[in-house]
Amino acid sequence: MDLARYSRQMLFEPIKEDGQRHLSDSTALVVGAGALGTVISNQLVRAGIGKLRMIDRDYVEMSNLQRQMLFDEEDVQHVLPKAVAAKNKLEKMNSQVTIEPIVGNASVESIDDLIKDAHVVLDGTDNFSTRYLLNDACFKYQIPFSYGGVVSSRGMTAFFMPGKTPCLRCITKEGGGNAQTCDTVGVISPAVDMVASFQVTETLKYLTGNERSLRNTLKTFDVWHNHHYDMKLATASPDCPVCRHHEFPALQQTAQSEETVLCGRDTVQIHRKPGINLDQWEHTLRKVANVKRTPFLLKATLQEGIHFVMFTDGRVLVQGTEDPVQARTLYDRYIGS
Image (tube, rainbow, N blue to C red; front, side):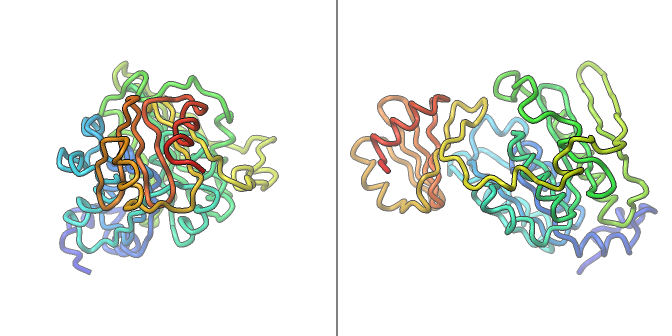
């Protein structure tokens, strides 16, 4: 391992060479390769994390480029999955880091394989159902969870330590929130960068052996209106199923729902098949749609103004509607069971 590239980081007294070596022996799981996930991954790879596993179910679109720092217009033209496009950039930054990209869902079925050798899990997602899944898995397997969320000019972040801090469920109510998303009220890039930087800073503290410097607060801020607030992570909620009863509700779901509305995306994800042969569907759908094929996915534009985006793992994004009934109808009409 060439430590010279990290010389300025090792001059920082809390890290030094010993902390750098600990960091380079560590594995981080980043869930989501969008706004937060790309900033997180960029910083961890440049800092010298040993292995970075990242998972994302989406592909790069033009509207991503304003804030998702690892992507460019060429990625949009090639309709690259975000995890693949991110890997292409990250490997050019630091060839010493092992990058493992996964195009797919973080789900009940996949979480054990995703988290198995991770020393820390970082949240780059945009929905609380996935965050609760990560929270429950981390607390079950005693792995720190770096939570972050951002919308508009507001951000929120905390570093949860199983056995030492309460969990995400203790400070947020499942099903609560005001349902605002980046696609409904917008988002500015500096707010994204700030949340991700707080997430990575706490992660670096932990992985370099500086646990005593962890912030131990839920930090919230509005960078535009100059509001900042820290709430101490004190004791677990007395009725928390995870911290108090060790029940892990998100891990007890027996099956993944076939339809998932991607909030604010005008998209419904349908996952009925264990796999999809893109060659076969390129031939079939070309008769009724304008089809674009890449090595990773197939995009078909129908006359109704609906887009199907098909992945080899069996997922289909039905774009142009947030109505699961309409999405199922179109799916059944063109793809079937």
